[in-house]
Length: 214
View 1 (cartoon, rainbow, N blue to C red):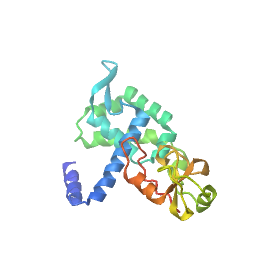
View 2 (cartoon, rainbow, N blue to C red):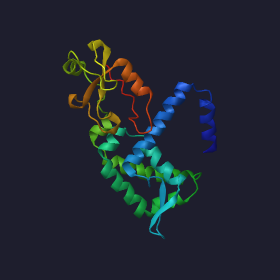
View 3 (cartoon, helix red, strand yellow):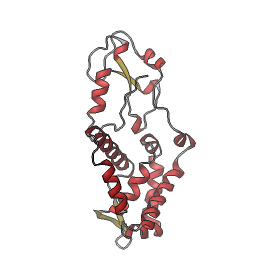
View 4 (cartoon, rainbow, N blue to C red):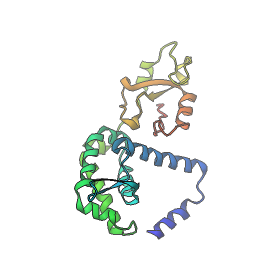
């Protein structure tokens, strides 16, 4: 495990600020979705003796949750949030094998793989074929034409979009939070507004960059 971490750090030690920013956004986005699905107890172990979640952050629970969640789109995770929450909660409360994996050192390879696999398979059983085959995210050009009219007001800055060439399509409900790629969930923004919106995300905003021009 340490050798793998050293190799990773060596490979990425000279990453550009832009690459670091992208990776940070992806990481923060994953944490944000996990908290949306699992709540504030997402990274805490469960004590069977006390019959309650531990107050202290658990690094072993943390890796068992973060790694599996990173393999699925935020849209799919939010679509199946209730089912995923129930399955993972059941594992944490009742699966003795998972509890054993969590209690062991993070450096135990078999324990790391075991606990990650448990959660990954639980999420996988909640997904449909459509979730696993890829999701449509880009709006078609025809939707842009259908939305635009003279005097259309940009939803971001509140000013009129004077020409259709100045507009881009944005998900009203973010794609990453379950918003569908359909005209019912589409709005127009100025091109520069769409880029400004995408490049200045707070911790409560959509974590997927919605640069949805055709």
